Image (cartoon, rainbow, N blue to C red; front, side, top):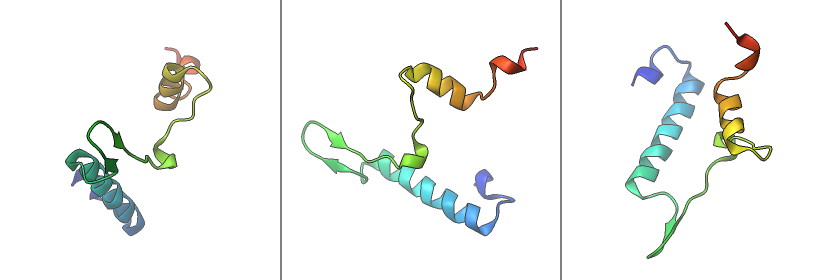
Length: 71
């Protein structure tokens, strides 16, 4: 609910869609399931591109310009 306060109509629609998707993942209603695995498609705009080092890609995406902003 906090994410929706002060947002534009288009932002609200996008955030509601995302929150419904996350709830669907948690409820198990998104993706195809069998007895062993669950296949889930993650939208490409939620993926972090990797250059081979997954951890470095996550850190770079989460904290951009971290090393340039030393205190």
